[in-house]
Image (cartoon, rainbow, N blue to C red):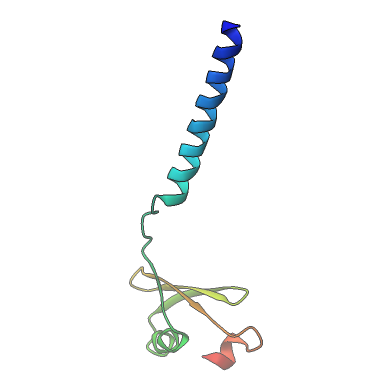
Length: 86
């Protein structure tokens, strides 16, 4: 009888710990990354000024590395090419 009570107590403890871990991971803010979101117009300005080191395209997302070492993200229209957009 006592071992049954101990076992149910351990199960409840594990459930409470799992719920606490879930709430902690859901509610705790992640540290802000140093990647900024910019408009495609500001990315085009950086390209025209020669301040872009590289551009990576992933679907409609652009990841832009500047010569300053900054990381910028932007979006493009999926039906328009990057060259036409810039």
